[in-house]
Length: 436
Image 1: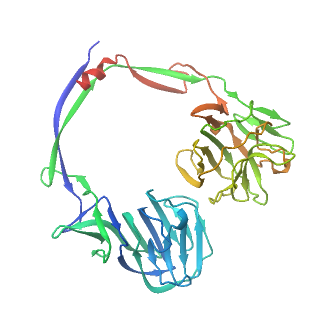
Image 2: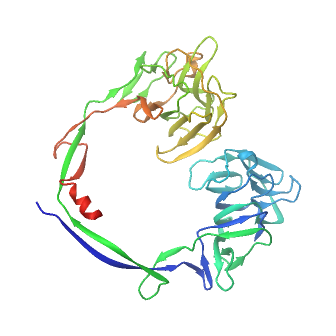
Image 3: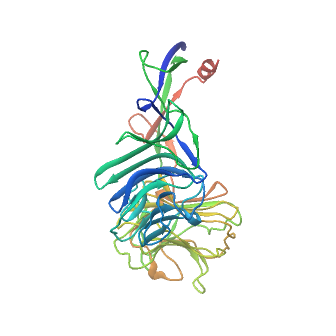
């Protein structure tokens, strides 16, 4: 059995990305100490803005927009009390979270705020009619990455941070109008130049890179899943179809084999579920509560958002992300062991959005009753009306799996009968050859 490692040197060429002749694009620009940059684009209810930024301070004035001093005239986004505020004239919507030193890419329109690319809104209000002589400005300390502005369907502003080469002045370049704007107050700290690959005929610098070509033999191993175990106890006529639970009712539900009692340890709960088309009543996803006095942990869909109550919390965790009808979601509730609770929502189980966070809270109290899925003892009429998928459900305590909805043993398979495979190098010594 033979192995061969061939080492070559490859020269790669790079150049600094230019937004226009005489201007180099930057990865970011920090605007601090009450900055003022005026885009020159009028504040108007027809605007849609996509802002990629990091807030560097909490402000009740303006991050993006303008503020005349009158709440009935302003058009502005800011982050007072670590929440998103978006004013348009006399209207205001606020909620969700906007923390200092955290990067966001938000879309603002009439009349909503959402994470760019998301299918649901973080905030939603009634459509407004608004126009003024004010223009869209940056007026609070931020790390600026990009800003796109549309008027209706017309792309009017595409701002990126850049440096004017002739005098090293940093500002924003509007690639739509070829205008360069600089701060009229405050300070600027520039990021690195944006670099792009280039050619031997057109480059600013190069590097010589060692390239290894490795020939090695691998062995393909095949695996298949054994008979799954569904780690629940069913009550009544609950239906289990490959781990997807349905037919919940006042007397049909599931219980966990053991109750949830994490004490003061960090923990994390995840559930996968599909909503129904009737949002007129609260519906329970998970509960471990006592019927006599409503004490215990309860995770509900409260009309169109999430509501979580737990003994020990000063108040319930009330989410602001709104659910759609008949749609699948993942919900993750966690405690870090130091007083912080987080509720996150996902549409694919991979990309998560923080819905609500509570800090400086107590450890939850323990209620010694059955932990239930899709049902709650205090009010059986709040049973879940669509499905809960055990394949996306688990509970972890202190990083270890306490419970998972489905356990699937992995068994040897064959090339003719397998669920997945992996290619394994027959000899690990090849890694040592590469490193030397």
